[in-house]
Every structure is written in structure tokens, then in C-alpha cells.
Length: 180
Length: 225
Image 1 (cartoon, rainbow over the protein chains, first blue to last red):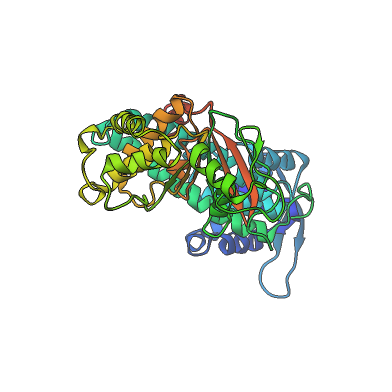
Image 2 (cartoon, each protein chain N blue to C red):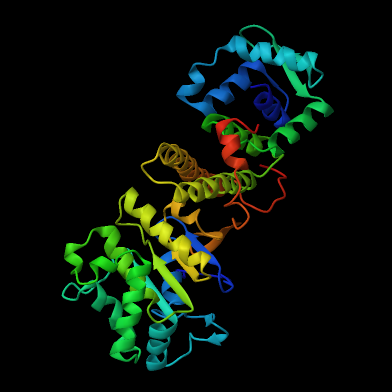
């Protein structure tokens, strides 16, 4: 979650309540489970680690004052590194989803480039799984495991195709990751 | 609006290429263009060093018979002919002597593991067996390239594995293969996977080096992280 919050801050300084609303918007019902305390704890950890600073306090017309956080230079570096690092074959759907949202919001990476890299990774895994599966009897224990792995990778690839469709409409390609 | 636009593909001899994409992306149109079943409005199609999109009808039909093997989702076997006769037919149409055609058909049915089903009608064969007959038929004129359109689309998982094992053997033997599929598991058996979106190339992944490895599988199991 720290990485996602940092990426959201890359767009503009913001306070905990707003960050939480943006996470809830990106995660839908999964975001409802996220309590406000988790966001504030994560923000204060980021501040201690020198990745974000408490820039100022906003005094809204109603309600308590809000600490507005901004990224530090090392925070920005960490976001870029997080977006560039491979998600790994076991990465779950919501983690990769948040990476795409964060990439688009921060403008630090092209969501379509992340999708392409992930497809490459998943297809390589599927090629290995299929090659191994064809060398084994379909009814063997090993064959059964390989089929499960292949089906899971296939499901991930199908969802990735949906991501590609959606993000190609939202974020026109070829702006070098400038504006998001 | 064109069904396929600005697609520049070069398939070297011996390569297995998979073309994927959502339905309506133009992948079947592309296969029809490659197979000389349709002609491009603009652009060129070359096969084995020869331009084929501007051939006359008769020359084109000849080229299709002799240089291209087709495999379809629905098998397209002749119901009233036996498995062996189905395989022989394109050889006879291409001018082979009946004895030669019979010999080649017998050899190919053996190669696809159906020597003992040679005299069966398609209706007596399972889906996987019918597709293997269709593959034998596609190979009978020793084509430069085999084009397959959703070759596992009508098959269950066990029959799909049978057919993919057979294709794997063809690839190992150096047969050039181009297959259109919406099944990522089928595409993953190719050397190279291109995806189309709205008739244009949207992705190009080379898997030649990946098949024999296990690094990604290890990572999936959490043993190589």
C-alpha cells in the first residue's frame, strides 16, 4: 500500500482522506475494507522513511485540519522503481491493477507498457507450462498440476487483454509517459 | 475501414507463428489472405520467395493445393470418404498417381497415430481423431506452410493436448506453421505470438527461448523467488 500511496502523491500533494477516496474509487468494493487508519499509518511511515513530507495543513470549512503530504525526491525515485519492477508471476490481480492506476495517475509510466511487459512474462510462463504439459501424460499427477498452472496463466492473460482494451482508450500512447 | 491494416509479417521457414486477438480483430481475415483464399485490396503476400496475391485464379488454386495445407476448426472432412481417402484426395487433385497418394496417406495416418483407423468414416472417429486426419490431409502435398484456423476450437482438453503434441512434432520436424487461435494455451506452444487489435499488430512476443526453461514455473511455485 505504501507504494500505491506514493504513486498517487506523484501526481500532486494530497491528504489522507483524499488518498483513501482515490483508493476506494480504484478498488471498488475491495476498497471498502480499507480503513482510514491504515492509510494514516502508512503515510506516517512514509514520512519517517523520508519518502514523503508533511508539506502543509489544510483547514477545511468543516471538520478537522488535514495534513497535506508531498513526495520527496527519493519518494519519486521509489515510485519509478516500483512501477518498473516486474510484478512477478504470482502477483495478484489487485496489486497489478493498482500499479496500472498509479502509473496512469502519476504519469510516471505508461499503463500499456506495463501490460505489454506483464503479457510477455505470463506468456513465457505459459510457454514453459505448456511445453512441460505436452511432455507429460494428461492424466498423471504432474500433468494435472501443469494444467492448473496453465489455466491460471490463461485467466491472467485474458484479464490482461481487458486491461489493454480499457487503458488504450483512456491513455493515448506515445506521449512518453508525460501526462497520464 | 480495413479488416487488416499495416500488418507486416515475415515468417521464416521452420517457424511456428500464432496469431491471437479478440473476435473481429482481423485474425481470420489475415489467415485467408496468407492462404490465398482472399486477396488484399492493397499490399502483397509472398510465399517461398514468390509473390502470390497477384496470381490468376487457376495459378492461385494450384498454389493453394500444392504449397499450403489448411486445418480448420470444423475439420471439413468429406463424410462419405474414409480417413485414408480424405487424406489421399488433395494428393490426387495435385496430380499424384493413385499408388503414390495411397502410400503417402498411409504414412501420414501412421504419423498421426491413426494407422488402425484408415478405413473408418469420419462419423466413426472422435473429434480429436478427425482433426488428426485433417492434419494428415494438410500435410499430404508436403506444403511450404500449414495454416490452422482455431484447430482446437471444437476439441476437449484431452483432444487438444493430442493435437498440440502432434503440432509440436511437426515443428520439431521443421514444418512452418501459422495458426490463428483465441486460446492462449495454444498460442503459447508457438515460437512467436503476434496479437491483432482492430486489424493492426498490437503485440509481438518471441517464445523460442522459453519453452525449454523452467525459471518462470519455479517462480510460480515460489521456489525461485
